[in-house]
Length: 423
Ligand code: AMP
Ligand code: GLY
Image (cartoon, rainbow, N blue to C red; front, side, top):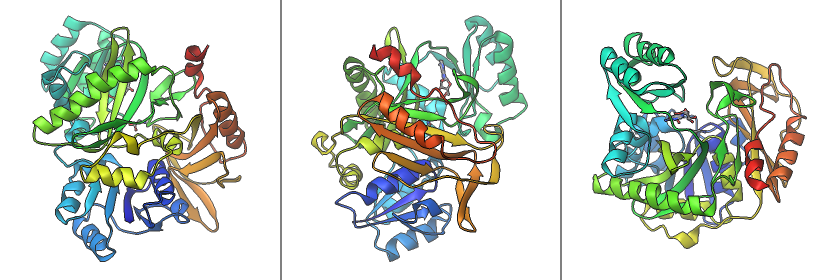
């Protein structure tokens, strides 16, 4: 089978790497891809926003399966256009991608179908929003409705901070259209975990759990980022909690989407808070997590191409998905200034080759004059594999210490929360 992955980041690097290993896959294309993918995929210099050109390319090359990595093309409806051209797609329709594209849509659906999540209100009026904040008190969470690249959420520790966030989004127009409506929700205390699942419209097969590290600094300090590191599996997600999340969150949401006439196909990402009352939804994403993918897919023992095609054609079964024993840990190296800004053009020194137990996925690099340079906020995801989490972390940090670029930032405490569950 010929497969084409849409996207160019670390998640997509992982997807093309894993698809290239699949027995069901003969060749992998990446659109646009990146230089780092060139040894496993043919990169195609096209812009996904030009739907007609993308479809013409897919037809000319007889691509049989398209895998859409990032949220923007999903929310813009690329899956619908490719599907209409008769090509199988792993990724939700524009309608189903609202689960990520609109917080109001996701919250209203969870409420309608009794899926556990934080209590909330929806506001476009500053005075009404402020009255709700006064009533509820702090801590409280303010979220821009639309896509804001992970930056549209403020966890306010005081009422004043919450009102400032509302003013910023509703009056100062900080996120443009994405922020004309805000969701204000109850603060949930607990530990977070990510649970991704393969979905074919009806059947849901969960992947192994993982945990992201969203803040820029050690000890979960500083501003939110796209994610500074991950590990899998996450021991906070015990067998019982996984069962509970499957039955109270994943299955009801997939049934809800079907009942609403927008069946969900692709990777469903549930961001969970493990509260004293059980797992509750922090957010849904309509795609693989980045950098969750970098630790989850290396532990997949079965054929990713076969699973994705089965999702795209409504034929997924649980026996298609099996996992290797052991753990994976990913440390993100970010460029100078991230997350407020990023820095391009810093030369990356050190060995970036894959080995049996280390994988180096490129999130934001460019290749110039024979070397890789920084080209984004998150630059590299360095993954270690091991028989347990400690050995995976040792292997990952061993490689991290041998990669250098000006202004490189990384967290030194990836995975540490897991050990509280492992004693
Ligand atoms: P989101 O973009 O919705 O995932 O939110 C970003 C981050 O804000 C999450 O990963 C949580 O750490 C935090 N967060 C979001 N909603 C809540 C909530 N209701 N209670 C506590 N923390 C939250
Ligand atoms: N790592 C968080 C996300 O992909 O949304």
